[in-house]
Length: 292
Ligand SMILES: C[S@@+](CC[C@H](N)C(=O)[O-])C[C@H]1O[C@@H](n2cnc3c(N)ncnc32)[C@H](O)[C@@H]1O
Image (cartoon, helix red, strand yellow):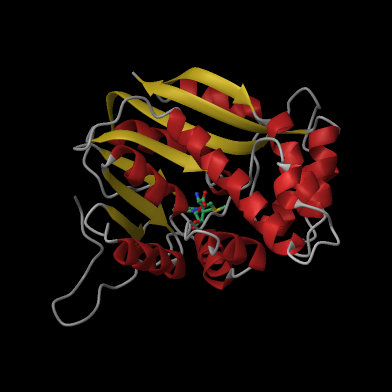
C-alpha cells in the first residue's frame, strides 16, 4: 500500500488535487455543511451524502402539526438513506473478516461504518476532501473501529492499493465526478478476479434522448457531470466489469424526494430530481458487476 506522503517532522501532507476540477470538488466538499446532511447524520452517527430508498413510514413521521414532526421527518429521511447503503452492501457478495473493501468517494464515511459493522472487515475510503476524511476518521475513532475503517484524501482514479488486493469496491453517488473509463479501469486493477464492484448512481436515460434541463440543473448544482446509463454499461464492458445485477431504483427513491420536499431542510434541488424522475429523463440505478 502506498502512503499519503507523510514526513517525519509534520502531520501527513494532503496530496494536491491532480486537476483544477478536482480542486473545485475538494473545495465544494470541504465547505459542505448542509443541515440536510448533518442533522440526518446526528440521528445515529452515520453520516451520508446520498439519497434514500423505500416506502415512507407515514405513521413514524406523524402529522405536520405535531410538535416533534420535524425531528421525526429527519429520522425518517435518515432511515431511508441508510436503507440505500444497506441495499448497496447487499450486492457486494460474500465478504470475509480478512477482506479489504474500498469506498471510492467515501464522503463522511457512513457507508464505510455500515460495511465494517456488517462484515467485520477492513474498509478503505477515498475522498478529495480533507474535511471529509478527518470527519470519517474521527467517527471511526469514536466508534473504536479506526483499526478497520480509514479514510484518506486521494484521487480514486489512482488508488493507493496493489493490483488485485481488494475483495469488493463501490461508488455510492460519486461516479459522476470522473471519466467512467478511467474509473472502471482503476477499480478493475485493484479488485481481485471474481471480486465485486457496485455503484448506486443517478444517470440520464438514453431513451429520453439527451440530458434534460433538470439533469443539467443537477449538474450545475453539484458541479458534477452525470453520465448516461449507456455510458455506464459500455465502460464496464470495456474494463472487465460484467454486470451481474442492474436495478432501477427510480420508483424506490421517489418517496424519499417527496418527503424531503416537504421538510424545512430543502436545498432547492428537490424539484429537479422529482421532475426528472417523473419525466423519465433521469434514473436512479444500482449496478453490481463481477470483475472477470
Ligand atoms: C455525493 S458525495 C458521496 C459520498 C459517499 N459516497 C456517501 O454515500 O455518503 C461524493 C463524494 O465523491 C468524492 N469524489 C469526487 N471525485 C473524487 C475523486 N476523483 N476521487 C476521490 N473522491 C472523489 C467527493 O470527495 C465526495 O466525498
